[in-house]
Image (cartoon, rainbow, N blue to C red):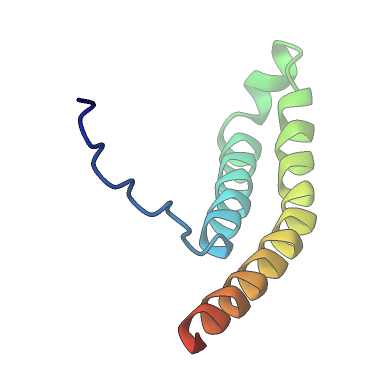
Length: 85
């Protein structure tokens, strides 16, 4: 006789805006640290593209933040609709 499987846990659905904001802050901090403390080293070794990478990560974070804001709004609507049932 087959054993009964334990119930599956509910999937995690955390708010995503804090993750997007953390990513924006991380790119900004790394870029500023590189710019302030390591600009000479980056120039000497031909790694100035690291600064551009940080800038790109920071700027791409804004569309990501907008998507995560929309995701969280839909998440709130789903949870409200499920609570009303």
